[in-house]
Image 1: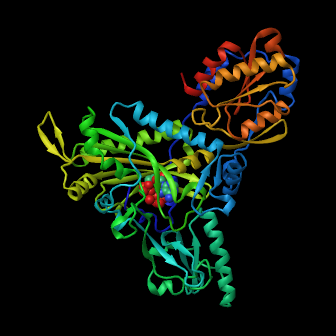
Image 2 (image 1 turned 90 degrees about the vertical axis):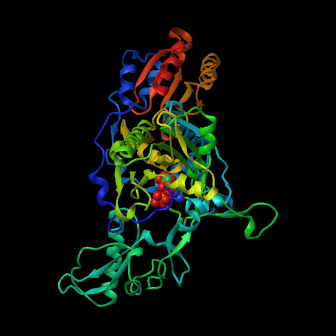
Length: 571
Ligand code: ATP
C-alpha cells in the first residue's frame, strides 16, 4: 500500500486486534511426530547414551509458557548480534540509525523467507509470475503514483532538543483529577505496548501532580495521537525530549530518499530510491502482459529493496530506512463488491496460510480492518494481518483492494494505454487490483520472536529458536561424538558432505555433545545428527535429534537424506 499510512487506531490502537485473533491450529510438529514414530529405535552405544543422557532427560523438556509474555526486545537484539543473525549497520563507525546488516545466519534466514514466499505465491501458482525491476525508476513514476505529493508522515519537532517525532506515534492524554474533574496538564508518551505506555504516563502524571502541588486520584488516561490535537492543547503537551511544551504542530514530511542521476546535480537530475516495490510492477504491467501467456485474473510478484526516510526508525528491524518488500499486484476484472471482495478475502486467507506455513504462531496474529479515515480515498478495502511483537500489536502485512487507481494513474501520467483486452467478451478495460504487501525484515522479526522459546531439561534452563525447518538458517548440524577417532570423524564428514549438497548444514566437533546441542538450539537448527562408535563398529546408523522435543531416533546412514527431506521439505 502506498499513500495512506496513518489514520487508523487513533485512540488506543490495540482494541481491534485481540478480538479478531485467529483460533489455534497444529503446525509441522504433527507430521514430524508421525514420521518419527516408526523410526525410533534404542539409542544404544554406551558412549552415545552417556553423552545424551548427561544433558537431556528421557521424559523431555518442561516448557516455560510465560517465555513470550516476558520476552524483551533487548534479548532478541542481543541474540541476533551474538549469533550472527543481524548487526547494526556500520557499527565500527558507531552505527547508522535505521540501517541493519544481516550476518551469516541472518542472510540464510532472509534467503529462506524470500524463497518460501516465491515458492508459495509464484512457483506453486499458475496465475502469478515474477519480475525484478530496477530500484530507481523514471521520476515521473512517483508523480503519477501520488508519492511525490502524498507519501509523507506527520512530523513534530521539539524546538528545544531539535529531536523529531512522528506525530502519529506520540500519544498524549490530559491528566484529570477524579474528584473535581479539573485538568492539571498533559502527559505525552511514545507508542508502545499498553502496559509500557500506561506505566510511563503514570510516572509523568505523578511528576505533574507534584509540580502543581495537587493531590488525589486521576481519571483513566484518554490517549490520542498528536495528529489529533489542537494548537491550544499542543501548547500544554510536554515534549518527550525537554519535558516542556516545546513541540511544533505536525507537518508533512516526505519519506522518499532523493538522489541525482547523471553528471548534473540540479533539479533536472533528481530521482528517488523506490519507497515500495509495487510501482515497479505497475510500470511493467504492459510488458508482462505482452510477453507472457497469462490471462485475467493474474498476478505479478516482486521481491526487493525499498527505502523510506522514516522520521523515527525504531524497534530494531521493524521500522528501518532500508528494507525489503514482497509484493504482489493481482489484477482482476473491474466491478463492484461482488467482484473484488471474493478475491480480496481469498488473498487474506492465502496470506495468513503462508504466514502459518513459515511458522508464525497463530495466537500471535490478528486482523486490523481499515475503515473510514484509515482507508485511502481510492481503496475499496484494506486488511492488515497484525503480529503481537514484544513492543505491541503492529501491522505485519497489508492486503488492499485498490480498484484501478494505479494503472489508471500511470496510463494518464505516461500517455500509454494500459488496458486489458478480454478475448471472450471482446471488451477493453483497465483491470482492478488486489495488493498483498509484506515486509521481509518485519516478517523475519516476527519469525524470530514467534520462534523464541524457553524450557528446562534436567533442571537446566534452555532458550532456543523453534524455527520451522523450511526457514531455519541451518537445517542440520552434523556432530561426530568425538573428534579424535579417525574412522568416526571420517564417517561423519562423509555424511556432512552429502547433506551439504541439499541443505545449509553445520559441522561441529568441539565440546561436549550437550553443549553442541545447545549451540545449535539457540539458533534454531531443527536437527542434530550424531555419528558415534556404534555407527562405525556395528549398526551403520546415526542418531537424529529433534530440537524441540529433544527426542532422538536411530536411522541407518542411507536413510538420513530421505528422512530429513521429509522433515525439512515435507516430501
Ligand atoms: P507502517 O504503517 O508500519 O509504516 P505502511 O502501512 O506504511 O506501514 P506499507 O506501505 O503498506 O506499510 O508497506 C507494506 C509492508 O512493508 C508493511 O506491511 C511492512 O511489512 C513493510 N514495511 C513498511 N515500512 C517499513 C519499514 N520502514 N521497515 C520495515 N518494513 C516496512
